[in-house]
Length: 164
Image (cartoon, rainbow, N blue to C red; front, side, top):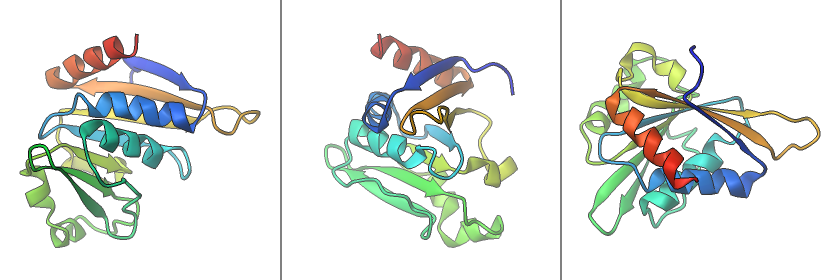
């Protein structure tokens, strides 16, 4: 993978959540955000921040066992889709959770373990890798961002500007 467009060191879980909140405020319907990292890397913490920033009144938790959680935003009835593909065994299993409806839905889509979806992912997306970096500080994370497509290049530029 090429060099990330943006890299941020987050000192703790609260900061990781706040970064998610900043990104969540910028998401539009149809935006696809892919969250990559090992177990316990902080993907769900970051996703929970995205949900808060986006305006969900429900708390985002890991959808590992259900594959998809839907979160409504009361202000405009949009839906934020939070998918976890970790336990996905086949692409056919996506149909059982209404995957086609999710792509055509009226809100952004967060995907944990997106690499399991392979060619089913749209070519334009925001790819975020979250990694626990320091053995000395277990709460520190490195977040690396790749924008794939013009929409996400602009989104990432706006996100970077908000953080300054």
